[in-house]
Image (cartoon, rainbow, N blue to C red; front, side):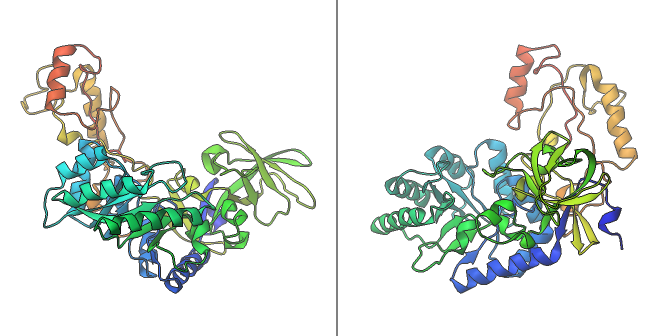
Length: 458
């Protein structure tokens, strides 16, 4: 089998034994405290690990974007929570399609979000579960008071195709007690209004480990716990030996006795430090810290007995593993130095999709060739058609999600089908009315004039 010495750098390494131990530890804690665990897949973005988490006892998974949820549904995950305000016709259509495939729940914190959900979901026999998001101190999304939570819950309860699913929050780190009090007040206010609140969902890995005695929280959504990172170590969640994710890097320069340069900069380690002073720490090299990042260079300062040499490979524990995962196309599962498998980060970049086949693109010139149904591509049409046909001939077209394997893999080549376009991306809510208005406004090559081949993009 290949080893980590066969890998190019920078690469992500995932220590399988450590990740599995972290999964088991969190699940045991949740079971002991009567909590339902619903892990957030944002950390790993892999169906492989999502299935491991569910097999260990999780009730389902949490995704942050519809595209992520679609990937997980394609891979066979059946209970998905999307704690996000879903707005816009295109996203709502995708959400409705997803609702027909899996057990789905979402959140809302405004009447505007609920208006779109209520208009989209109208089947009282199969309602969409909607939780009210509460700002319990994070200062991000969420209703501000218990009374606001009750007001939205009533709107949800009266909507024929929606069902009030409970309360959700993402509390500020270290302020779990404050969040607990907020949620308790809101639950009591709901009860006084005749609304049952059976599900109270909270998140954040560091605060998961506190005692859950007499807590109103019924469900927890940790994400980082599976890999851990320097931030979690600083919060006392574990030690460096518990960190499953590291970035394999190469020393490419050693200008001074105390300064070395890695081939891993902000595009591999991320500049998101979560408030920590440095950007990473080298495993097995005492006192070696990544103190600065350029896009493709990482500056390591050595102290004490730490030694490095040019060409040496090192493993970096990043400050925030979730964003590092999102910077790579694939990860390598390892046992010691043996590479067990290499997996595509299936849900990476799944923020939205361009679904060209749902749009009627404006026609500018007569159809090409003898095919009256052939799409018109404007001035650049011939070149773009050739590129698309070249991709087909070489087998480079990206597979649809339903063709993906059970673990999120596909049989597509390493390089995905190219996104060919000659204009900025078409608005995802583009419809015939927009096209007609664009035709009236612009007969040239501007946003209303040029048309492009827009393939499905993750």
